[in-house]
Structure formats: C-alpha cells, structure tokens
Length: 469
Image 1 (tube, rainbow, N blue to C red):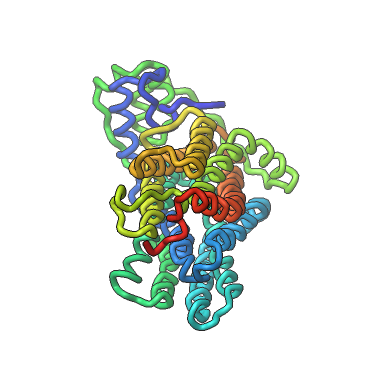
Image 2 (image 1 turned 45 degrees about the horizontal axis):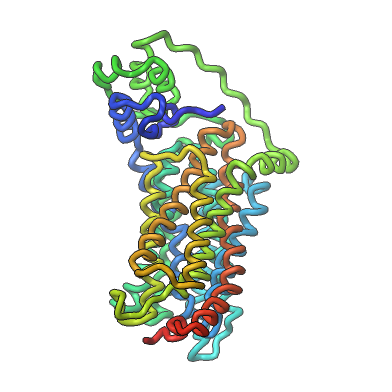
C-alpha cells in the first residue's frame, strides 16, 4: 500500500493533499531532529568511497590506456563486473554478514587500484592494457558489491541513511574528478603516485562501518529488533492543532521521534495498538526471482532507461558538442568535456541530496525527459542548431538533475512501497539497473562517438579531431 509523503518522513509537494505550513513546519522539525549524525556521516562516507575510485578511474582513462583506445572500453571494464555482481549477488549475498562484506570490498578496491597503479605505463613503458583493465575490473567488483550491500543496509537505518548515501554517491563524482586533477596538476604527482595515493581511500569504508556507524540495528537482519531510542523532542501546541486529523494519524508512521508522533495523534484520537512483528522467513532462490520480476516495471525499467540515456550522452554525444573557441569561455577544445562532466556531476550531487525535501510522484516522467535530452543533443551534434555553448551547459546540468532524481527516488519509493520482509532484497536487486544501463550506454557510445565526429568533420566542423586547439 502506498503511503503519503507525510507518513514517509518526506515533504509533500506544494499543492498536494495534506500540504500546509503547519505540515511543512512539523515535518522539517521531524526530519532534522530525528536524524542521527553518526548514521548520516557513515552512509555519506560509504557513498563517497564506494564510488570515488570508479570516478578516478574514468578521470584517468586516457592516462591508463592511451589516447588511441576508446574511452568507452575503460568505462565498460569499470562497470561490467559491477553489473554482473549486482545481477547475481542479491540471490546469495544475504548469507554474508555486512561486516565481512566491508572487509572484502576494501580488499578488492584497494587491490584493484594497486594493480592499476603498479602496472607499467601503456604509453611510455609498454605495459599491458589487459592487466590494467583487469585491475579496473577488480575495483568494479568492489563497487558493485558495495552499492547493493549499502542500499540493502539502509533498510535497517531508515530514510536518513538513504538520503546520506545518495548525497555521498553524488558527491563522489565531484570529489573523485577534483581529487585526480588536484594530485596530478596541482601537486604535480605522477600518474602512478596519484593512483597509489587514491588506493588508500577504500580503508575509510571499514573505519566508517566499525567506528562511526551505530551497530545496534545490524542484528535486526536476523532478529528484527528495533533501533536505539531517539531523544524525545516537543512540538508546539499550535502546530498540533493546525495539523489535519489524517496527517496527525499518519505521523505515527513517520520516522521522527516517537513522542512527536504520539503527541500529534493523541490530540485527535486514541493510538491504536501495533500488530506483532512477524518472524523472518529465509528466502529461496525461486522466491527471490519472483521478487525481482515484480520490481522490473515500477522501479528497474525507469532507472535503466535514465542511465542508458545519460551515459550515452556523456560517453558518445558530449565529446562532439563543440563550438568555435571564440564564442566560448575556453582556450582549447579539450576543455569542453571536463566542463560538461563537472556540470553533470554537480546536477547529480544536488538532486541526490534532495530526497529529504523533494519527492517525485512517479519515475517515468524524468526518465522520458532524459531520453528527450538524448534526442535533442544528438540532433544538435548532427545539425548544429543550438546557438550557444551555454545552452549545452544548461542542458548538461539538467541532465544531471534528472539522473540523480530518478536514482534516489527509485530507492526511496522501494523503502515506502515494498513490504518490509522484501525490502532489503529489493533495494539491492534494483541497483542492477544503473550498471546495466551504463553497460548498454558504453557500447552505444563506442559505436556513436566516432561516427558523429566523422559526420561533423565532413560538414566543416573538425573540432572533435583537434583536441589540442
């Protein structure tokens, strides 16, 4: 059964039933007063560290394999193992404790980064591209296991943890790209030393898990015990009186402090008794397959579509969205793509950080808008009708906003709409859609980028072949 925004702890959209100043005021107080800083910090760090190596590897793509190898090949090596992990692991990974998974993820990610860094350079020392891509694949395994595990773990820590995870994954794009530029350009470290420095970042994840994250909710994976008590706070009488009766009743389901929900509700009517919790049932493989089929249309498909569209733009279309330098703020054509990537990551970070304040009623609309972005930018690459690069900047930022909104709202809807006994599996299983979309987009990008560049060159727009100018 669907619950209203007020019952989920999220803000209702303006004009929606139950939206009023009293509701917003009470809900904002509940959101922030009920937050556990340790949970927020831990899951934000999980999101950053799990994704930052992925971003650093993509930022170093040309340095890793040389300019003659398509960037889409590095992207494919960086996401295919993650996709396969997410495809099969949800059906058995529940048997591995989260504490063990954290250690495995740290070892894989660190080992992969060390292998990438210590393999001789492809361009100067005749190193093996295959060995470097193998290291990329090992790090990708860790990323895939990390995403499905941490999303499953949010089931035990509530929507605050999901908001922090989403913000962290969005921030990883900015932090990873910025860190690689800082190490190589500002500190003047070699590519090898920059990657070796980055190889120590995964150790932050077990530190956050064992030293920062509250451990009390973890036994709920087996015993379904509750979380530690949250300090009680008071709510002003006028806020309670102004709340509609149905909103006050729904406040009992909100993740804010218990005393606040009880006070709001008991001002209208007696509090009903809660049903006794059910004992968990160990899922079978067939049960999990049925669960996965039910997830496809409402959650997996819109997430898959938005990722195919946005990564096709990023890998196949954006490198050809160039303008004469005199009409742009740039001095070289190689500066276009990093700016597009930055604006995209900025949009992703903002929208993935917004889930505590904004929800979208359904997922397909932003997915279709992303497909429209893909069509618009592809047509511009072919026919060059947009008059200014600043319009491309705006569309790229909008692209990031749409992608981040679909990602974080997909998992927020699962937390609200899926039964509790199915939720942990559903959160992890649905994460296969983003990696699957990136895999498809990387193949499309490798096929499209070269053809679009040739098309532009034949029509007197040779900029994609002039990265130095």
